[in-house]
Image (cartoon, rainbow, N blue to C red; front, side, top):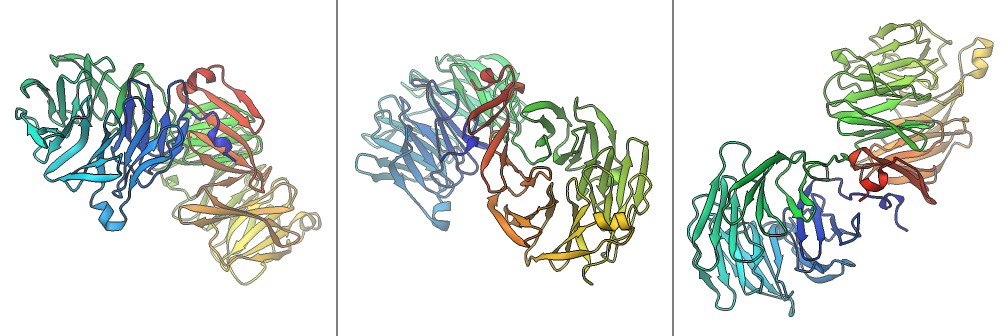
Amino acid sequence: MPSLVDQFCPNVHDAAITAAAYDPDSGVIATADATGLVAVTRRGETTPGLIFHPGGPVTQAIGLIRGGSYVAVGDDNGTVGVYRCDNAQPVFVERREGARGQVRAMRGVAISPEGSKLASIAVDGLVRLWDLTRGEREIAWQGFGGVTVEFDARGDRLLCIDNQGQPKLVDLRTREGLHMDRIQMPADEAFFSRDNTYVVCSGPSGISLLRVVDGRLCASFATRGGSGIGNVVLSPDGTRAAALTRRSVHVFSLPDLQPVESLKHGAPDSEGVGFWTHKGILVAGSDGLMHGPDSQGVPPIVTATGFGEHRVAIHTDSVAVWSGDTRQVMIPVGTELATAHIDRDGQLVVARPMRGPVQIYRAKDGKRMFEGQPDTSASPNVAAGGTVVAVQLPNGGVRWWDLARNQAFELRWPRAMALSGSGTWLGVVTPKGAVRILDPGTGRDAVRPPVPLADVPVRMLAFVNRRADLLVLDDDGVLGHYDLGAAIRENRPGEGRDVLDFNVDIDRMWGITGGQYGALRLPMDDRCTILFVDLHACDVVHELNDMHPYAWVDPETGHVLEPARSGAILERGMNGEELRVLRSLPEGQWISFGPRGILNASEGAGGAMG
């Protein structure tokens, strides 16, 4: 069954888009990213109707047949294939494995207009030509370079770039090169004009235009300064060419190659991948989105956390705050963020940048309230509860602020901390691994210190939401549970019990409302596993594997939150069932939906979807 995430999905790439192609005859768009994911959007589709993963990472090597029925893909592992654009079924595939394949990492592919030939250029300097009707390779020419190969309108000639950056036009019937003037600015790319009367060559230092009929150089334009040309795209009507740089789009008229206009494209860390559709120029960014001069995209979600009705998501340098099914505010922080947390009542957002001190914002409108001191940078743990914000300092100790009393406190000795959901208690671990529970308003003991469960130091703790319960995890991986209610009533130290012994690494822990269950996060390379433990039966009742490495458990509901592609938070039940998706859309819009359909959406969400 398809994931909920696949619905209402304006884009599919959560890695940098590294290859793109557009067929002006059919309107079909094909894109590929650094993970090797390929997406095809056909005429009439507002989102990609075909998503598939044919192989390894793709770098520039993608091409569409005229008419848009087939897409050619070459990857960094040396595999090249042709696939149907309606169902991704392979028409032709030639695979390479290991080091042998990486030597011929593909950089450009093209299908002849009638669909009988496939050409490629690879990093080994070979231009390869296959006969698709027989599924056999015909030619492997040495001494080439660049990142493009292209057939002319009849499929009789192949346009390439040699290893000196010079365009080469080869007659495939005679296997002879046709005359082309030498260009002064070496090129990486060469394209036929839409009417096949000219060849447009581009490289970092400029653009050259040659006439096909006699190979004469007609015009050129040299860049001066700047970041250099990354790519050139042609308008569907053939009257203009646009040079794409890291920040800008520079448009030229054809065939005189005169500057027309320049504008910013807004794509972050662009490598010049893009295309020119009937609606305009789009440039790929490292955020997995296509950007135009007037577009406003949504960066992927880095982390997502939440408490009760409230959810927060990090979109690179902004924080999206959700309340129920509604996106409440998007907070622009202006610097790359690591994580953010919201308190149970949805009043405060604490954002931790990748570099720099923690920032505290008002959740309802995104107003910044204050900034922590410089030594809060790289804090391993931040929390908000009630009117209290607490930060575990990277060099040891805990600092917290009671905003209601306008007071700040600091202890230099704790090695770990946890804040209760109401902000009533601050749990800390002493240098010797004992547990103390403090009153955040005074910094003194709120209750008598619990009796240690063993001689093993505690390294992590978490309060159970809305109960006087505490979970602890010691250095041996033993999970313990304290019911502090009776101890508080009788004014005695709390006594606990061991629950389970985990002989694995655990990096997060949550106590869930009701006191029946706790949750643990186990890091697994670039993924994680979430375990739900019955604290009374002392048993693991649910195990969610292959989760996002920063998957988060809501202590109020036990629901699991994980970042999902296309600017979304995917919410699951404790058993892994998909419950809801909260998605930020381009142009400042948003939508929330579940298995039965849309739950809520911004007024312009339909327009943002296309």
